[in-house]
Amino acid sequence: MATDKTEVAIALLIREGQFLLQLRDNIPTIVYPGHWAFFGGHIEPGETPEAGVWREIKEEIDYVPPYLNRFTRWEHQNIVRHVFYGPLVVPPEQLQLNEGWDLGLWTEADIQRGKKFSLVANQVRPLGQPHRMLLLRFLATHPQALRGE
Image (tube, rainbow, N blue to C red; front, side, top):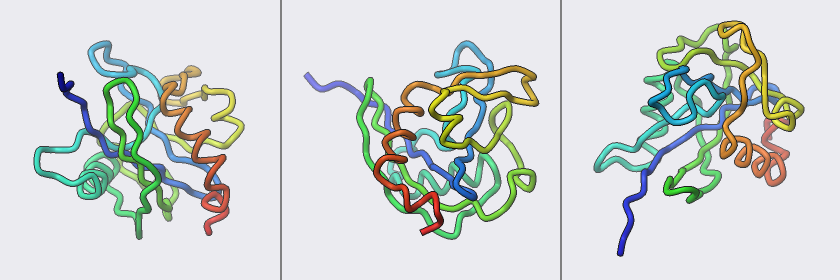
């Protein structure tokens, strides 16, 4: 018996050795409400993961990276995550947040702690567990990406 899986395309955007993350809206009916997570979202019918990640970044923060590389395809808890990474070449302050509560740059130490303060929320908010798992995996396998290589 086949199970339906949700497919999403997400982006790890890197600036000066830090990851840009989104603080999801604190709405109880969404997945990981009030948690830090990636920019990205559902892949539309007939859309490739590549097209989906570019569309989502543009929609969510009005940003077009110079390039994106494929990191992995990860199936976890009935969600297929197509993960891409690329540079954030502008300061976060220049982005237009169209979806989510806040955005911010995360260091490796922040990721290890699994939580970070949000000025907008005025409180420490957790990093979603699958997001933390993916970031730790990326850090272990792509250290050169944090150096801009």
